Length: 129
Image (tube, rainbow, N blue to C red; front, side, top):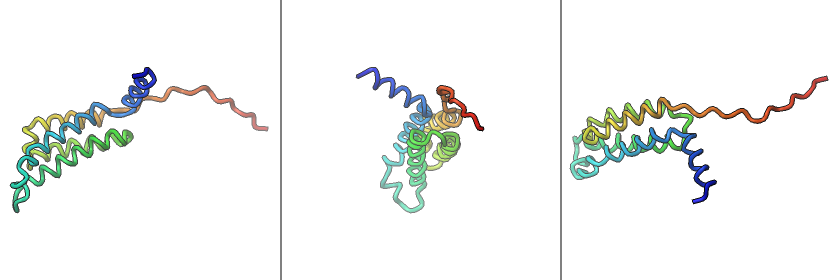
């Protein structure tokens, strides 16, 4: 791998809430594990397992959105914490591990701040006459 490629990857990671989005993505997959493994039961009328599929899918989606829309990371973080906590209803929170990872990932996304852009070369001011 070339040095330029590594530098571009590092700069891409620094411009996004990488840790939080990755934890949200993994949390959503863990939350989805239980309802997907019980898919015949989840499709029965009156089953709450379908909520686990919905909430787990939303947490995965929020993890992907964290990568693609870093400017909205605070909203993504709050929604992710909300849906990770609600996943306890339909998916047991992915054995509670998924919920904890979702809360931590959501907190990382909420707390992430975009790096300050270094000031480019000062612009010359034109004289107004």
